[in-house]
Amino acid sequence: MTDPGAPQYVGLGRRALAFLLDNLVWLLGVVILLGFVPVDDAGEISEGAAAAILFVVATLWFNYFAFAEWRWGQTIGKNATGIEVTSEDGGRISFGQASIRNLLRLVDVLVIGPVMIAGSERRQRLGDRAAKTVVLRRRPLSPPAAVAAASAPASLAQPAGQPAGSTAPPAPEPAAAATAGQPSFAWVTWSPTDVFIGVVAAAVISTLAALVLVAPWDSDISTTEGQLVAQLALWGTLIGVALGAATSGKFRDIQGAWRKLGFRGLTWRQARLAGLAWLGYLAAAAIAAGLLDALFGYRPDQEELSETLDVDLTPVVVVALYASTCVIAPLTEETFFRGFLFGGLRRRWPFWAAAGVSGLIFGVVHAGTGVAAIPFLAALGIVFAYLYERTGSIWPSIIAHTLNNLLAITVQVTT
Image 1 (cartoon, rainbow, N blue to C red):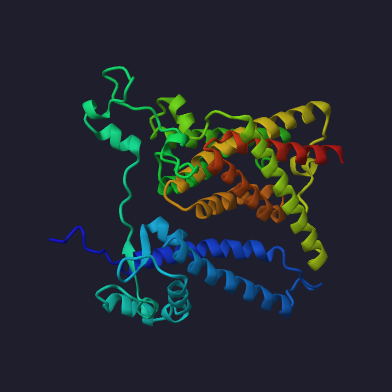
Image 2 (image 1 turned 120 degrees about the vertical axis):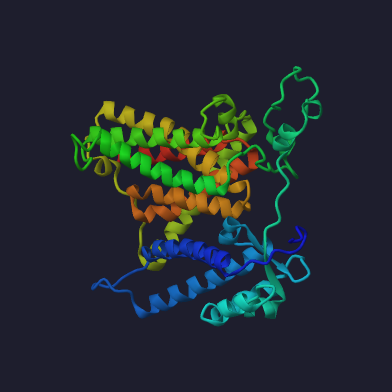
């Protein structure tokens, strides 16, 4: 019988899956980076630019693994597959250990690594042997207070002041679940796996809805009416998937579901923080755009709104655009991308991993406004995630999202 307290060393299959997940994220990042690379008249990248890209990507790739394993014991892929890196004695690894094991990854990735993992009692590859590290199954986390209380006997779980016979305690508030002023996201009841399933489901359902509702009378969804119906289908799908996750697919206790998705009280201080964070993003984006222009002569402009929608901006259309872009879009998109997507990842992942992945997906989804805008929108998504992380409420990110859309649509409508 296996000792439940013994270390559970991880074999090749799970480690390979984690490595694949990590490098899929990097592959997407490289594709986005290539969009900013200057090309010559023949559409080819110069040797100097290619060398610079290779150096930057290799440096970032190495430091991503080394820093993440040193700081958190796991990368995004390792977190998703439930494994972590520790010292042989079970302690946290140093940056030196992380650097050694990842430098030797270049050797291990060929043949020697899989062979050593398969033949080693502690499933160590060459990098692990040199750095004195092991890869273990992640230790199970303690259940959130709300889950533990709900599974306890009624006599023990009954909070003071709650009516007799009521066994379901209220969802924990950020203030109650916070550590050092930061919310722990203990109120989230769905996992990172649920998040990825939900993202795929939202993409499939919204696409099918557009085909069923629009394609019969607008085959390529090119008319204003067709695009409007498709957009409404997308917004409805985002809300439906988020509420489905927050209610475990039962769509009951909708009020409680909204609170799980971050709809809590808003204070003036939080609203002010939202405005300051958005202004900080604008300043950083302006500096980044200026550097791209100065260094490479590249200006990442988004498509004009009238060209994207292929519609004349009449007064009625402008009012409709302001209502949809500045009211409906921030509410629905923040519910899904921050409340559901970031919240689900943040339940298990470190902030930067959860914010980075959710921000990248947010940027890719908005690629229709111009591929060049993806990195900027991904960074904006991280700002929105920071606001949710800092306040425990989704309202500040909705405010910042509204301000950004308000500025963008005003600039495009008036120029």
